Length: 292
Image (cartoon, rainbow, N blue to C red; front, side):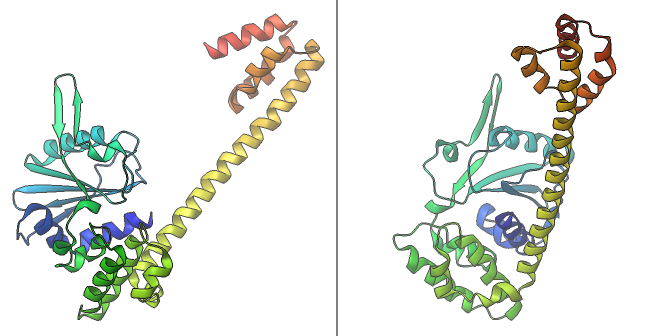
């Protein structure tokens, strides 16, 4: 979630930097398209759409290649929906952030019978850091770029950050740099070159913190609801087992296993009919109907 928010902030605050780096264009009239195209919640990546006069840049950051649905299929899905809605040229770029030897980071197309769809893939750890250090919005990504001396690269980026004249911009870029550098550097090393105080003082950090807290609260509520439902199901199951035992005697292990799989609603339905059972055969017939 932290990386998602950081990258979303960088792209939306500095769209010209990303357009220049990825499309070699100096376009300045850039519109950020909202991601209402997302049909499913995607927590492992950051998706952004930038629209220029005659093109859309679909920019997707991934920390890991694995995703559900698979990334190639998702890229095709996005392209179709974007093209149908905007009917213009669409450049899709996936940027992998964290070094890995997984074959997934080398896949740049979706293939199926009669269908092939290609997109660009950038493995940031293979990229020259120099172009990334030319623009404030790209500086945080430079910490993840190609180098024979990671510590020296981090130091160089920190120097570039310190040279930003506008105080608020310097603070925000410093925070984003620290957060992204955390993908590959130990916190102690990051603190050697970048001011930790910027984190607590910056607006972007507070925004990320609040969103993280809200997500945690939402997840806690969801987990609480799920736990409550499961606890209710287990209580209902124990009650049904006692009633069935009193009604039919000992229940064989196979039927017990099938009862264990019933939902809370199905257990409640069982409670309404079990008094009509005269034998295990009646229970088995009822389970067969439920599972059919």
